[in-house]
Image (cartoon, rainbow, N blue to C red; front, side, top):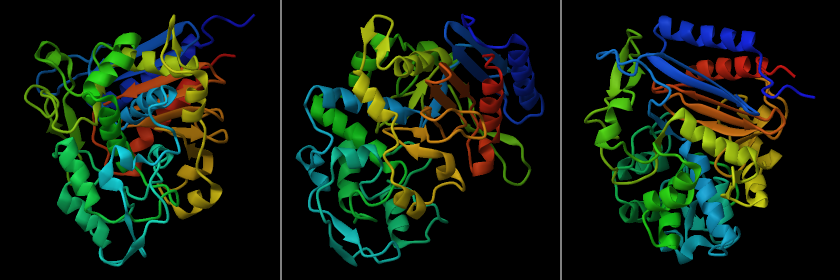
Amino acid sequence: MRPPGGLSHARLEHLDGALRGHVARGDVPGLVALVARRDTVHVTATGVQDVASRAPMRRDTIFRIASMTKPVTAAAVMMLVEESRIGLDDPVERWLPELASRRVLRRIESPLDDTVPAARPITLRDLLTFRFGLGAVMAMPGTYPIQAAMAELGVAPGPEQVAAAPDDYMRRIGRLPLMHQPGEKWMYHTGADILGVLIARIAGMRLADFLRERIFAPLGMRDTGFSVPDAAIDRLAACYARDPKSGALTVWDAADGGRYARPPVFPSLLVSTADDFLAFGRMLLQHGRHTDVRILERPSVELMMTDHITPEQKAASPFFPGFWDTKGWGFGGAVVTRRDPNGANPGSYGWSGGFGTNFIVDPAAEMVAILLVQRLMRSADDSALNEEFLTLAYQAVSD
C-alpha cells in the first residue's frame, strides 16, 4: 500500500530551508508555500507581510494572485457552458456586440487603418484559448502602433488593474482592430478580461457575486475576492518591486489604503490565501468535485486541463523563451505537455501571477503546490524562485 501522504519529511525540511534562505537574503520580504499530496498538507509561512511594520507572515495572509485568477474565470465560464447558456463555438457578439464585425490588421506592424475584415466571428473557444486576436505583444512598448493604441486606451496588459468600468472597457476594445484573425494565434491575457465581462452579462449579475455564489462559497474560499474588507486588511501583504538601480525592495502597493483595499472599477484580479486556493486546486484534481459538492462536471475540467494550441501556433506565437517546449495552453492556464525540468508530469495544469505567485495541479502525482509571494515580476528572471519551489516540491514526493 502507498503511504497516505507520500511526502518526505526530510525533503520538505530542505524545501523550507531554501525558502527561508530567499527571505533571509532579502529576495522577498516573506512568503507562504503549500504542498498538498493525498491527505497531507505542508505549509511554510516565513518572513514578514510588511517590511515597515514587521507583521509576521501567516498561513492565512492574503495575497494579490493576479493571473492565477485566470483558471478561476475559466471555471466560471465552463459553468455557463454546462448550463447551455453559451456554447464553446458560439459567437460571443450576442453578449459582446463590441466584438461584432471586427477588422484585422494586415500585419502586426500596420497602421491602425490598414485592415481587412475578420474571416469569421469571435467564439467563446477563441477567448478561452487566448486566440481571439488581441493580447500582449512580447516586444518593447511602442514597437507597433497597436501597442501604443492599447496603452493610450488603458487596455494594455500589465500589473495595474483596469481603470475603466466593464462597459467602458469593452467600448475601448471595440475601437481597436484585431492583431490577428480569430483562432489564428495565441496572445496572452486580454481574453481573460473580456471573459469576466462576458460572464457578468450572460449571468445578469456582477462578476464578483457570481464567483462568490458559484465557486467561493461552495469551496469555502472565504478570503478570496477582488478586494479585502476592512476587517481583514491587516492580513493583506504589502506588495514590493525591486529598484532597477539599487536592487532594493520598495513598496509598490500598500495594504491599508492600497489598490486592493476597496472594490475595483473593473473586477479582474483576485486576492486569495494558500488554503483558499488549495480548495480550488483540489477541486480540479478531483475532476470538479470538492468533498460532497460538485462544482464542475468532469469533461469541463478535462477541457480546461487539455492543451488546445497547435504546433504551428506555438512556433508563430513567441512567449517566454522555451515556454512552449514543455507546455501548452488549456482554458485559463498552462498545461504540461512533456515532463518539464521541475518534475511536473504531462497533464499538470497551473499558472503564475505577476506578483510572483504560482500554483500547479498534478493529477499523476496527486499533488497541488502553491507559492504566494508579493514582489512585482519585471522579467522572466523573476520566475527563478517559482521554478526552485516547484523543483523542491517535486523532490519531496516520496513514492
